Amino acid sequence: MSNQNIDFNSVGEALKTQPEVSVLTKGASMRPMLREHKDIVIIQRISGELRVGDVVAYRGVGKKYTLHRIVSIKKGALIIRGDNNYFTEFNIKKEDIVGILKEFYRDGKYINCKTNKGYRCYTKYIILSYPFRFFWYRRLRPILSKIKHSVFK
Image 1 (cartoon, rainbow, N blue to C red):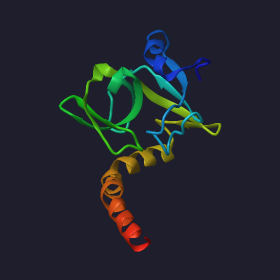
Image 2 (cartoon, rainbow, N blue to C red):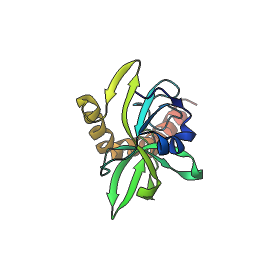
Image 3 (cartoon, rainbow, N blue to C red):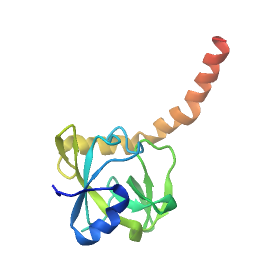
């Protein structure tokens, strides 16, 4: 593991001079996998092809660095979404990607993103379940909320 724990906004600059960096997580977009200010992620420079399911650090909206999952690749453009998000970013260029999640530490437990079977199952689940989660969050839950409020006035 890299000794240097840097601020996430510096990840792009740090990866220019180091092969990998450790970063304390920030934000809730990758929950439940990564928890804000609790988990440490190791991000490495990209050394091969990017694949669906990879979690990448990239320059997102507002030119800040973000850590999200590749959910699709269409004609060379990446489609990216946080595990806890219900919106998707389209047409992210490979040049915007500065690193890839190699491993992370959750409650002191080491999880390797290439070899951990539980992590690989979670990745498949989170990508495949998105249409159902989206339907629940954006369509069904608001309807049920209105029904509840009309019944329990």
